[in-house]
Image 1 (cartoon, rainbow, N blue to C red):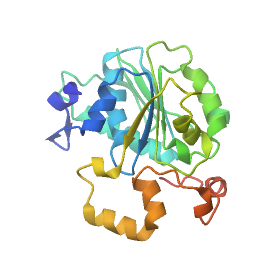
Image 2 (image 1 turned 60 degrees about the horizontal axis):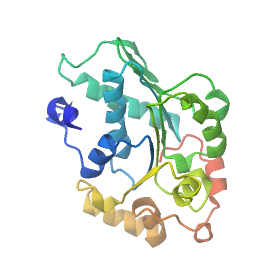
Image 3 (image 1 turned 45 degrees about the horizontal axis):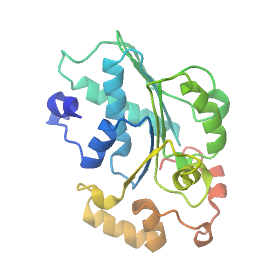
Image 4 (image 1 turned 90 degrees about the vertical axis):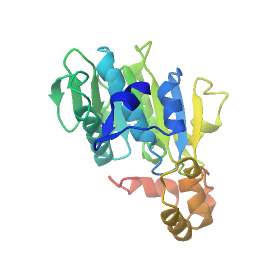
Amino acid sequence: MEFFETVGRINGEPIRFYPYQRQVLTCPDRFVLWLKARQTGASWGLGCRALYKALFDPATRWGYLAAGERQGKEWLEEVLMMWEELPSAWRLPTRVKTTTRLAFRHGGSISILPVNPGTVRSGRFSDLMLDEFAHVADDKALMAAALPRISRSKHGGLYIVSTPLGQRGMFHRMWTDREQFPQFRRMETPWQDCPDLDPEVISIARATLGDEGFAQEYELSFLDETLTFFPYDLFLANQGDIEV
């Protein structure tokens, strides 16, 4: 996005997007499924999109849900850091600034939503981002609770981002069933597309995870559950607030 690459900074250095980040930031599609490897900057890229919309469109009400509460707060911290390093002419003053919500005077807002389906039903949003959605335990109930919150938005979007977690769950179903979910643009980002991943760390990950585990975490493979030691649903039911 030209705005951030022109005036944006991270720790004082100019922002430079990877080609796949630029693709999702500039695409006109309202509904996006993004299958990505670990640590490729997908969530951060969409954080730039959320901040841009909140700064320039007062109607923006961006909602963010993640598999863990801490993950959401860290994502909002990164968004806040980008805002803090903008030139003063572009740095709209805030009217709300907490660990779960950022709202601008004369601008829009960005909010972290609770992961519990029972507490996510009220309110209205223009855009909704579901981060690491394959790793959400009660994904179907969460989707049912969250979708109505953007149902009155004509110009907002739904962005579902995740690494795979087996051939199960809503994310796998939505990714593979193009006939039932034709509205979505599908994007893929394996680890090889990110030039800043350390090859030595990748080598250690491959040796540690094994071929199947590495293929799922870094090469976008939906691993057959018969190849795993524990069933995925059992893992999700007991993971608590483990970050992914």
